[in-house]
Length: 224
Length: 271
Image 1 (cartoon, each protein chain N blue to C red):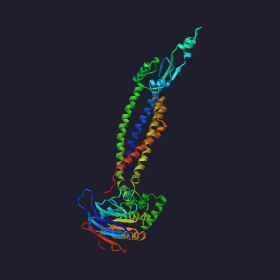
Image 2: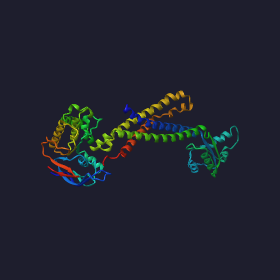
Image 3: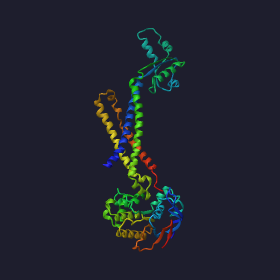
Image 4: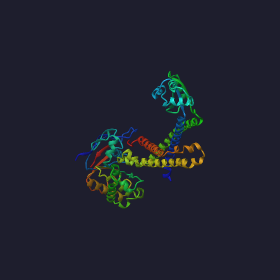
């Protein structure tokens, strides 16, 4: 399998801040891998993930996603690249003025699909995350677990090649967390997508093979 | 309530711009029309030694729009009415050429006197006489109002444009979270700003509609009962139906440009 993410001598940090969050780190993720990145709070897990979806430019080194060097990517190319990603956030990042169904098909709206495709896909995705009866509700009418299921459905809407999840169960109880892990396992197996999950703790219920990276002392190391 | 307030905050400055522009258009039309009337009444009588064409006159002054040759025969017949045994052919030969000269636009007194002077200096022209009303107080007042109105409309439009852009920024702030989420999923700037654009277009339509209604009421309800003769006679100039298209075009242009300014000035949230 070829690499979908190649990191070499990568240094990450925020503009205006002298200290680096990730320093001179290198690793590779292959297509179809399910990857957990763990580490203590403030270790730079979310920062690393942000750099993967282009929210943060590398300070130095190389971060290649697909064939795209993220330190040189133009805004236009980044827009195009992001349409191939499915991104899941700890705080769900749903559009509260839009219905659940419309939130789910956001990637399809962006890609310019027609209303009929959007409608069919919304039904299919909401059925997949068991939220069919909530299609017309607004996100704030749902529980946290349900909102995150909407977030997962949205991430899967356009059959992404890469799913990036930032603490997807960070705000959820155990039952809701298990539902989300189950959905992500299925996504990896059925879509053959690469999944990178940043989390505090790897769930016990996980049944598919995965790789485990840990962030320590500003470096990223594979432990499993 | 918040939704209505957000729209009103955009519609009001836009309406102010449209009312100002329409007022200017009306005054411009009234002034031009008045100028045309004055121009029609105004003529210069030129007596020349040789037969002259329009291009001969236009070489002397480019403001000359048309000439009309006065038939010598008519003048002679008029002069010799009732007289016998006179050789009219000789008189016609001896007479100079007479022309009524009209200007291409209505000019101020100084410019007219310059034209008269240029004509008088020409070696073939024997005499120049001007007829008609000179600048009157109405015309001067119109021109004055037009200038004042133009200044006022320019200042008001500038202030209102500023308010329009400010309101657009408020909208952008209100929609910031949605736009950021869309950006993360790869939406273009235009798609992210679609809501702003849609709102701006709807409000442009509303502002144009209100402005048109106000001027139609002015034309059909207020003017007939106002007792102002001059406006009554020129009622058709007060709100032309083509103005509706001009106002619609301008309001759309202002809205779309404002949205573009806000969208283009917003930074990508890339760190």
